[in-house]
Each structure stands twice: as structure tokens, then as C-alpha cells.
Amino acid sequence: MKDSEVLAKISEGDESALDFLYKKYYRMMTKLVISNSGTEDEARDVYQDALIVFWEKARSGKLVMTSKISTFIYSICLNLWRKELERKSRLSNEEKDNVEFQNMESEERERIIRECINELGDTCRRILMYYYFDGMSMNDIAEKLGYANTDTAKTKKYKCKKRLDDLVKSKYTASDFMD
Image (spheres, rainbow, N blue to C red):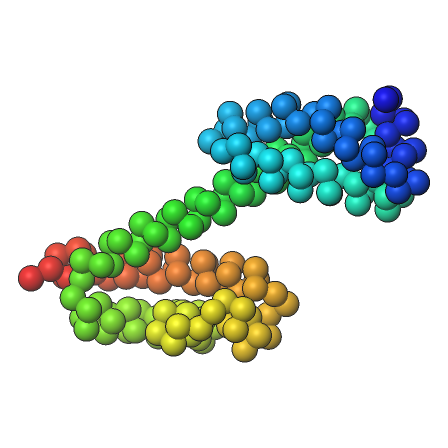
């Protein structure tokens, strides 16, 4: 099936075009993810998400093809995988930060962190206190603070946590927390 035929079928809502694309480019698209630190399952998920993005763009009538379909889907996969790797990296950094703080005495650690949180400003103070001390979920924090969605709250929390880490590191050394 040619690209023009695939696009015509998609514009008619014919899902056989989606099946065709899935089978035709599966190996190429999953190899992209697997060769860039991904697993087979992650590769499959990214490819399926990319096909959905492509389908929706093609169905909207706003898709302007300046390359082959395979190139377009490949670029969608690449962008989706990059975003996933960035997300994983942020989570990994948060885990490393948490390990650093585990060596501190609990009460002293809490006092220092509260002191530094209070220096960050109202928004960061509220987000971090809600999350770390009140145990609120990111969804609840987003609602309480009036953010558009959970992702916005997560991004703000990440930036506030980074500012807190930098502040603690600038004011204290590891020996301040050890006996």
C-alpha cells in the first residue's frame, strides 16, 4: 500500500490502514527505542502512542506530509522516547536526592528542611509541605492550588525541590548532618 492510499484510508476512518502501518514499521520503530536504552515493552508502548498521534493528526485534516509516513512516525517515536527518557532521568535524580537525605538524623533533617523551605517563597513552600509533610498526592495538590493538571503540579514540585536541594547544599555540608 502506498502512502497516499494509507492516508486516504485513514481519512475515511478505515483502521486497516493502522494495522498495515503497525505491522510494516514495527521492527524499525521498536529498534529505535531498544537501541536507546529501552525495553521491548517500552518500545511497543511508544510505537503505539506514535501511531495514535499520527492517526489523530491525519484524521484532523491538518496533516501536511512533507516526507514519507515512515519518516513522520519515526520522528514522533523519537520525540516520545526522548520525553520518556527525560521523565525517567528526573525520577532517578529525585531517588538519588532522597538517598542523600536518609543519612541525616530525622528531627534535625526535618528542622533544616523546614527552615530552607520557608526561604523558598509561598508557592514552593506550600507545594513541598503538602507533598512531603502532609503526604498529599500530586493530584490533590494540583486541585488545591488551582493548577490546570497534575503534570503542572509535578513540574512545579520538581523545580521547587531542585531549588530546595540547591539551598540546602549551599548552606550545609554532609558533616553538618553526621555525628
